[in-house]
Length: 590
Image 1: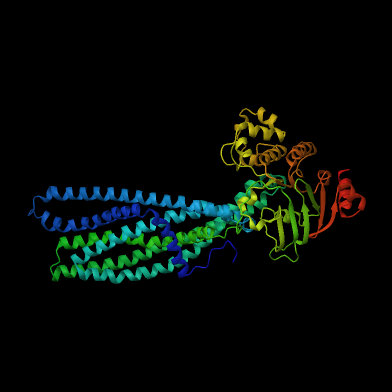
Image 2: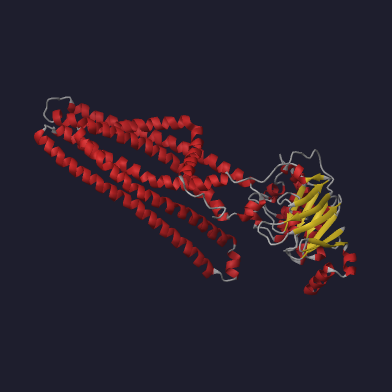
């Protein structure tokens, strides 16, 4: 079972799911109770229509009660009007409760999503996460109130109609009660089948979301590498599987009704035969028989809806498994107890740090000792997979070491509250992340309160982006689009630099900040970075060694160990791994 799979279905699990669902519905219990009262009144009016048949046929058509000419039609209109108003009010209020529940569920899910650890995000399927917000949460809130509404309204209707049936003829009612359990037992088989199909459907819906999401984000790669056939095949497979599951569910759902109707028809046939016998031998009146048959005819629809609600219940429970699995996902550890009282100086120390990823065959880092003094620029270089990113990721505690310590100004980062620790760090990476909104909103992202425009402009000017922003028709109010797709790579990088300048943290992490840029953009971004690095402790991860020649200290990692340290000229003189990497890169550039 993968981490995203729902738990195995069992009675204790289902009971817990019911408890969690209706605990959340219970927050609006007053509105829910009012809705159920209105639905109950609507249910109570239905049997009265059958009861009216007896006096209408026995006395109305004989002329013994002249008042029935106007009183019974008025009673029918009044009952239908009352039934309609109560049904509307009850249904509307239940929808209000459902949407309130959906609001709360999605809020809980998003709060938990933001609190999950970096490792959890890396190991979870993005399609499944999106599916929980868009489909599963709606299923839980909508179907849970539908189940309540159907159970209350239709159950009360069935009970009231059964009371009418017993009043008219207990012998005939006994026949109906004997036949009903046979229909229920048959329905249970289809309920179990629907449960399995619904789980498969939800898993495949998540796969569909993932395939479509990858098709959108990777559309350029698909076009350039002629991946149309492969993507069509992937989508076709998922789409066909969804159709197959839908048809299996439809066949099971559709089979329940005719089988139930067969038992109903059988019971009606027996009832008619017995009723005719009673009419001939025991004096069963025409009115009583008509009222009985009217009530019996009305009981089929609520019974059918009660039977069909089993399919909705299974969809709700399967979706609830997925939703509550996210809500109960462990959040990242925040076991620190100290708050940073002020701006730290920024001295960073890695003391005998070792780390191993789960399932890895060797240590990612092995007994690493490194110190970056306050205001110093330290560059981490080495082959891919040497542990550079893992080491730097320990500063904001995206990753914790298996052994050893990471300290800032002599304080172990595990002693600090996460928000307090991360307030001292800024990041500019190769993969710039921007949010839907204006340029000003993205530059001031995360800053509490309103940021003055002159401060935003100063940050953009330091990032060598102000002239470009001023040239835009809307200036700072320009919408950047999804992930700033309307800007070039260099402009996005400089926008990220402006965001880091606004934060003004004492420690700066540069993760391949210029590796994806052309030479001209790299020079512009590098000039902006040099302004950003002034007065800050900077840890630079770089493959392009030309960008780290001015670093105060260059640290060379290989297979998780520090193999060389020094300045650029010294390392070239030694002729070690750094010199080899530099020479190879220089030859490639030539």
